[in-house]
Image 1: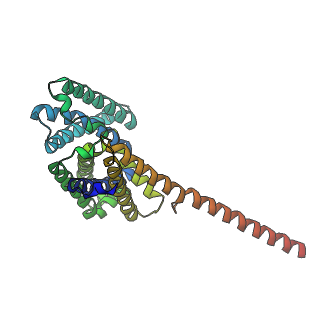
Image 2 (image 1 turned 135 degrees about the vertical axis):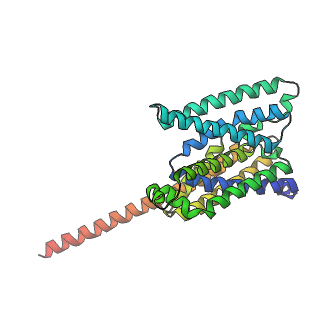
Image 3 (image 1 turned 120 degrees about the horizontal axis):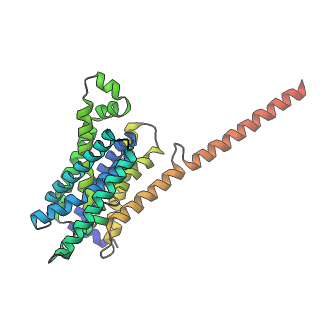
Length: 306
């Protein structure tokens, strides 16, 4: 089973998905506190048309060019969401759902067209739906690794600015921090995180790797800094273990296994997390009942003596 790890390409892919998982877990915390977890899902689906169009223009599968196409498509989707929210009475959730459906439908239509062309079914674009890390070559891994590390560095270098921006925007504005610039930077690194992982995790499931680790981390701490670290660790573990499991079988999609591992970590956190985990809440409730019974017994004994 573990002989597969001796393959150098597999080692590189595992390392890159682990780093991507760390980046996704880190970025997911920002999305969690900005209350835009659904935005990541909408932008992930909005990136698919850009991937296919980039392939059609280039005529070959080049991850870097596809990332550029996916980024442009996702940013257009984000602009549409913002325009719908500001120009109509439609709610943010509805706007995200509309953009998600329209762009994903367009992407599937373009993908069908590509697959029906000569040699199109050999393009490997189907791997962008559910993810297939095993299909990544060394150049893909390098591109993914560099961009993921860039996202991690941006979040941690500007940690204080992110904290102020997320929790007290008015105070941040008073300090001279441009909210417009921070919003632009947030959207850019969110889109970057999404598009670099779509080949490994897939456009359908990539949002799960942004959402689940951050929610899981919330059960272990109330500190924003520690939450980012824990979420990054959960994301990295899900990326590495999910990729390893998918590599054991021929043609197994990577995305579902990464999400399964992330979900397993979530359920562990849900039951055993020290912050409102089910087991901790049960033990605390049991302790409170015991203390109430003790105080009640003491009160009754004291009243009886009087």
